[in-house]
Amino acid sequence: MRIRIVDTFTDRPFTGNPAGVLVLDSAAFPGDDRLQHIAMELNLSETAFTHPLPPGGEADWALRWFTPAMEVDMCGHATLATAHVLHTTGAASGTVRFSARCGVLTAAAHPDGAITLDFPTSPLAPEPVPAGLAAALGAEPLCVHDTGPHVGDLLVELSDEATVRALTPDLAVLAEVSRRGVIVTAAAADPSLGYDFVSRGFFPRVGIDEDPVTGSAHTALAPFWAARFGRDELTGLQASARSGLVRTALRGGRTLLTGDAVTVIDGELLTAL
Image 1 (cartoon, rainbow, N blue to C red):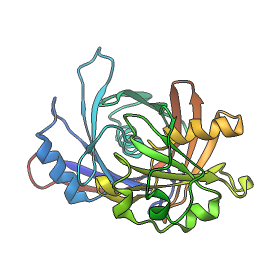
Image 2: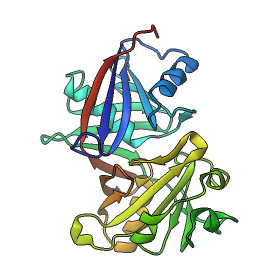
Image 3: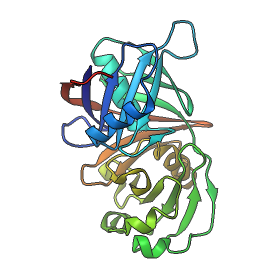
């Protein structure tokens, strides 16, 4: 069984967010324990598993995502990685439809190699700043929003880009204040550099201290910043050490996420699924 590692939301190797991708030739997934063990072995923020579905249904491929610690409901960068692998290997063309825990997701390929994901927009609900959050971040939140059932993060606005970039949070405390993780964000200091807002994502509760580029988080960041800027099309920079750009377009109940991807490792799983 082939295992590929794909860097996503980037067009350069060793940047963006790496995801593992296994394209299965079976009609069903192996046992959950087996999938979890493979994700633990790869030790990436997510590993995606996909297999083809019978023709004529609402989706073409079944898709699941696992962190090293657990299965998740929705993952943007590993979906982008999976679509990239299907297109570059000739297993799929045009728009690919995935059946996942969060519903049917689509991935449309562009002639330049970029891929646009169609994901559900996260419903934002303001809430009080949780006790201990400011101390854990080392910065005072301007506001906090819950991001709904599929994402499950706290979206935290901070004062400026420099504060977001400088954070060294207490991850043990952050793990106690959200079901999945904490997304911190601020407006770009200089939009002429090609992005409108910055973010970072911390997910210690699911085994990821800091995620390099979090596609699913942008289904919450897109409506948050669209309301602030009065524009439905924006670009976000996730300011991790690896960094990556996510182009977002708000379409009511759906958010389009566009990015590039590059395969950096193509290997073989030597033990049977």
